[in-house]
Amino acid sequence: MKNFESFLAPQLKEYALYRQNLGYSKKNIRSNLLAFDRYLRQQNTDWDKLQPSFFLELRGKIGKEPRTVNKILSALRSFFQFLVRKEICPENPLQDVPPLPERYFIPFVFSPEQTDQLLEVLCQSLRRDEKYFLLDLGIYMAILLMARCGMRISEPLRLFRNHYRSDDGTIYIEKTKFRKDRLIPAPKAVMMEIKNYLAVRKSLSPDDKNPYLLAGRKQKPLRGYQVRDLFHQAVRDIGLSKAKQGIGDLTFGSSTPHSLRHSFAINTLKRIKDRGESSQACGTSRFIGALPVLATYMGHRKYQYTGAYLKVKDAKHLSGLIEFAKSQLDVI
Image (cartoon, rainbow, N blue to C red; front, side):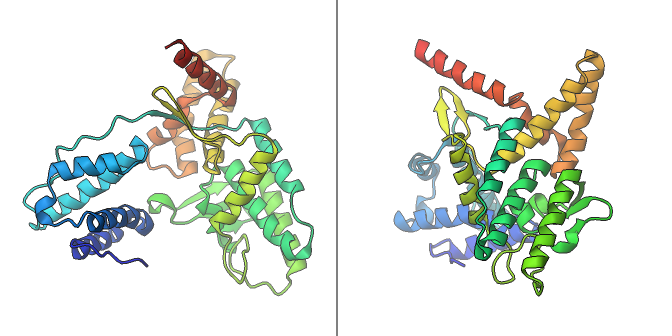
């Protein structure tokens, strides 16, 4: 684990430990603090230089998109507020440093047909060599769970065997983002895929003692980079590899593994809405009532967070938004 090395190293270490004890992710805490620590060393900074002007200059030099810059500033603002409470710092030097104006973010969305096509291509790309087949099949299963159950990329990788409950058709997801646990019903087709995967795994590795549901190498779980690599290759194969692009004051997201989670939410809500179209009042009530249920299923703390997925109706609507934004930019 990388250590803090600037003149604020003791305070940064204490604050990181404080946040971890509150239940926040160690990785997310340290990434911003380590970047700040590195910047302090590069600028040969001491206490006297930590004025608002210093942080305004830092804000301009970070060189990332506004949303990321604001997250870093927010983390530092919280850190210095901690120092104020500890009476180490007389006042928070970031209290009057404003955030950058952010572009409105529109996530990439796979249509249900594109999701099916992606999974089909992944299935066809599995290496048949016994040395690689089980590993590739496990990666395919991770992407399947993300697509069909709206999981975050870390969630299928951290599942243990006993988290899969074949008797009642559920999957237990333990201590993920926000340190929440949840028990979700899985579609019958997904349960069948898991059953088939475990049967293949048993036939190829009868003495397998790997405790994880999706087996990696040497009794370890699959790794995130393995899932991302196979995902991006499949997306390229079907011609849906899209880079993030800024058009006017909009940012259109790239096609990433997390897009499967966005797509699951958006397509689920669209199906609910479509089922209620015969009666507009009933359809609207059913649609709004589905948000808290979907929020619980996806592990959101508040159903308003799930509502954020409503920026686009579906993949077709997203395509239309991009074309409209481009046309407006041409006019300007």
